[in-house]
Length: 273
Ligand SMILES: [Fe+2]
Image 1: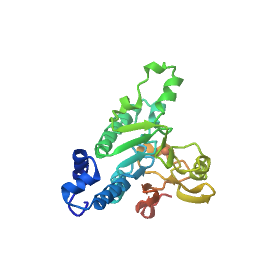
Image 2: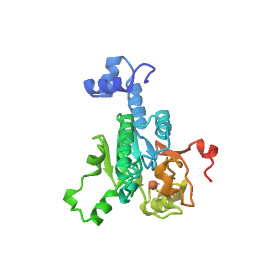
Image 3: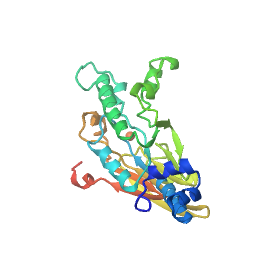
Image 4: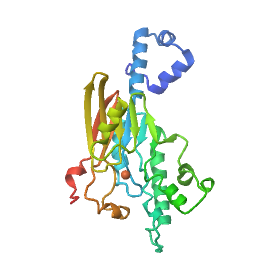
């Protein structure tokens, strides 16, 4: 609320009708500086972004999306960036004659259902989906099978991704660069930060969740790698359980340039040995 009385929607409607802060101030009988301040606060609030890491749907940890969205609400985020590997797609590359749940078709249908529910929750946000290696798994598979490229559907069509979702491999928010992977396994966020000389967010390393800042002659920058939101016990995770590294459940909120890396409480409560 602005001035304890006006909502964001009401202010935007006033702006639409009266055009300038001075005209709004005259209409409301307020000092013009008060109205200017309200719009300055609104602008700051719109510069708040939630980053959701690898979900590997259908293997998303139950309730993980809701936990992330609580953080978005807490900070008043208007933008959500999905960090890639949103879908697992792992069974697509396997041959499995079983007609049980775990075959390529079963996994696809389950993933589509969960993804639909997720996008319903995100419908009021501006959403950016950074494409990860798992999201695009179907394309190398199709190429190996010699399927012509014009015969391959886009991920948007295959999974019914809504129009409010922008899909891209790399994204700049203005002061932060976002990529899924490709900058090493030990400190990818530091590498990307130092290559681009700006704030950087990376994903992909499920067992790494960290924030590192540096001050150079060029300025103050931070880099962040954001764990994941995968259910370790899920059937689709079977192939991941052989990895020596374990998962860290976390999400990132950037609130007016200030990063907040949140670690899910289950990190301390679950035996992932
Ligand atoms: Fe991943």
